[in-house]
Figure 1 (tube, rainbow, N blue to C red):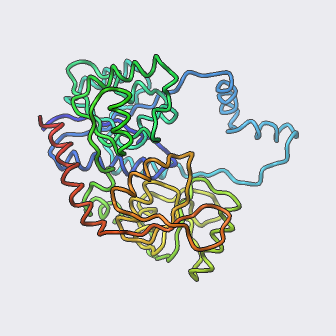
Figure 2 (figure 1 turned 180 degrees about the vertical axis):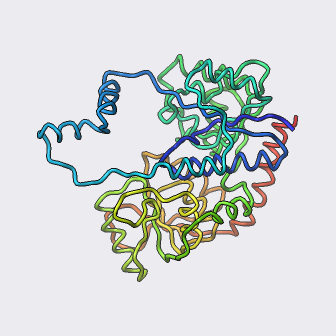
Figure 3 (figure 1 turned 30 degrees about the vertical axis):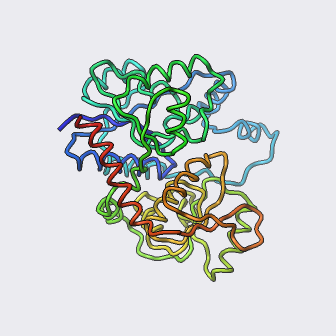
Length: 370
């Protein structure tokens, strides 16, 4: 048994995939016999003038400059309510994650990392600097010598290294990656970036939510309070009026109202609890989403999936997933305002996953035991 630290975006208070994949990876490492904990690292980037304005707004209890303008009477009031219930994600973490104390500095990271034999970074878009508040941390630049470094299903989010123009950062990342004991990426393009940009070899593996066994999901769903079933559900990270109109048309075609599984159906806007969100997907027939992890789960649970293309969140990871699972992507045969596609299997997804799980488990097992 080794002491293993895990680093990813588990601290998210609005992203179900982030917290679930974190729990899934910890579950796998514990099944392999290792004492695993998440390094609860959440630092802040260097603050620009724009960022300082944002800080001031937060001190005033505001989220956007538009709110300040509305208070001053310079802009009409926004009728949209703020979303509450972010504690839903913390409740999940308390039940399903083991974490270190919260750390916010490079020194704190290094001190915590000394407690582990190995630090594993992944999964999710941890190697996309636009998403990571401290890119060097997520390339394990603060891990001291003597602690092994491993990447499991780390993602760059896109098909290219987005920071190629930053020569200093690129050189630093190359230096840090050369110190890794083993590297794996969630997308084939990530393997190519590692080889072509950073001169290191990487293995293509499954996201943790496709790697875990059914007992992982049963354990979580057992804590759900949702008893009802909905034929058509949707989880849309970026919602607009055009999508709302399309949703109505799809619902009319299927003869079912679409149920929002992101927010609770109540007079107050609040996030669904994580077990409820997972249960609503499993108990549905059709899932509409623009979320990578929601697609993973819906395909795994054998649901009909309607995929809303969302380039800004990273299409490459989805292209890689569809290729690996032999999924056809075809435009929905409806006249819609937004691009929505139907996903269909060319082969048995379960059989493909069994083979891929064997390969992915071998990678992580060898990386930790070797």
